[in-house]
Amino acid sequence: MSGDSTETRLARARAALGAVHQKVGVERVPDEAPALPLAEALGALLPQGLRRGQVVSVEGATSLMLALGAAASAAGSWTAIVGLPRVGVVAAARRGIELSRLALMPHPGVQAAQVVGACVDGMDVVMLGPRLALSHADRRRLASRARERGSVVIVAEQWDGANVSLTVEGSHWRGLGSGDGRLREREMTVIVAGRSQGSGRRVNVTLDVDPGVAWARPGARTVIDEEVA
Picture (cartoon, rainbow, N blue to C red):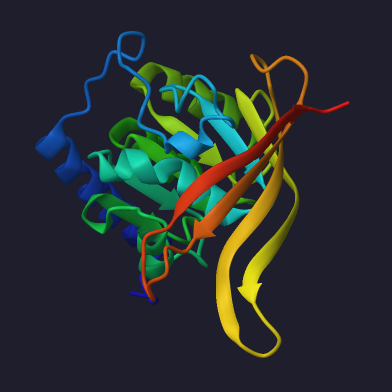
């Protein structure tokens, strides 16, 4: 409830995560675990897959963040979304996130480090909004914790030391005509960089592909893959 104190909300989040721990367990061996499922069309962005223990920063498109975690969620992974109040259950479901395995914590406040730490311990994919109350030391500890626990952290901002950085350089929508139609797909140009990526690459990805029905969980496709000069 909106009148609850920060401590009450944190206690409720911990209790919910504790229930998840008991149900699915939290013991992982990251070095031996395979990468989490990733939509085939997004493979050009992450050629090595959605690897456990990594931090992926995404700037410029929340929809791309959700798309990165959708296949893993559909395959059985638990997902937490922290500090993204504009992302609700409709938006998450629209992108293919399984709601029965989703924890939403839109306003962690000053307890952000504790909330995110609990999510990293118990969830497979943890998505973080920008401007969370995290110090540089908090970020280093969370990245180390993700490596130990085998979680994937996807962040909606720059993150020092991120394994992969995805920056949406530009995008445009398609589907609207002159006074008719509706938005059907969004084409994004994404700059891919990172510690294991070598020189930056420019990749065009199309989201919101509409198969012709009024409501569908969209797919994605890659159009172009080229190096950035």
